Length: 373
Image (cartoon, rainbow, N blue to C red; front, side, top):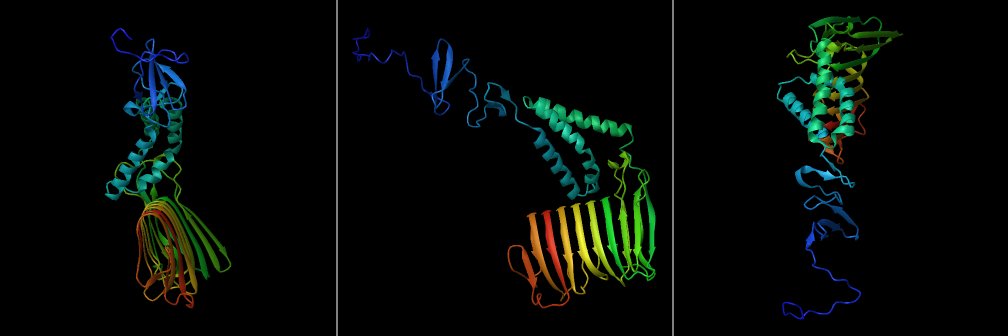
């Protein structure tokens, strides 16, 4: 009989007296208060001590108040913000590109800052994980330091746009390989060279950069031409003053078979190849839109397009047999109804297998829409 007049059951000799049973806390864990110290007992029976009112260690990937977690050693760590901020900035730039506020050429200039991005990520891993504010300060400090250096060296002024004329005579050429390599420019190619010209056109570049490189190699009646944009100095790193990107206009001969290879880093590409005798077309593009009009083939003409971000709008002449393989990561694919769908990624026109003249398209686009007309 207790002091309050209530009869209580006898205690077992094996069970020591216990003043009270605490309610469960934090899911399946129970807190036991002993001498002003809270002991948290988990499902495995292990316990850890902490002062009253403090958050428990992070178990099972749980996070606690204010977006902060525990590293399992009693230390809190901040939620990383460097990656999300970079994604947000990239999204804003893509939006401004699509709205026409910023040129697509900005990506070819910004990629040169990738060493600063690696430095910011490394410093964030060393010092910024415990504090989102410190992480943000690290990112701003590194990028601001790089921007200040570029400004000091004149990197924000790309200079004026100047042009260089291109004129390569046809001579005794009976076929040609033409390769075009551009980092940041708008590219336009057609089959409007005069009868005495193999390739002609205008190549724009900034006057603080080197003039585009031209390499012409004649081997018998076959000519190999390589054109390459060269932007080596810091003047090409930024172009925030509203100037348009350089533009290349190239005109190819229509009377001889041509193999065309186009490598574009950033910028829009317009290919009007409808008048060419095209042997093969290869397009490798990073960021930008591609508009292409293909010719009627002679034999089997391969067309290979490998692009990262942008859109592809390609026209195949009416009545031309074609097989089209399209692979896209994110975006829509719209293929004209005269090309019947064979599988998820394959389309084919009627009579393709028996046609002697046909196009064989292989398209790989990371992000963007594909339109085949």
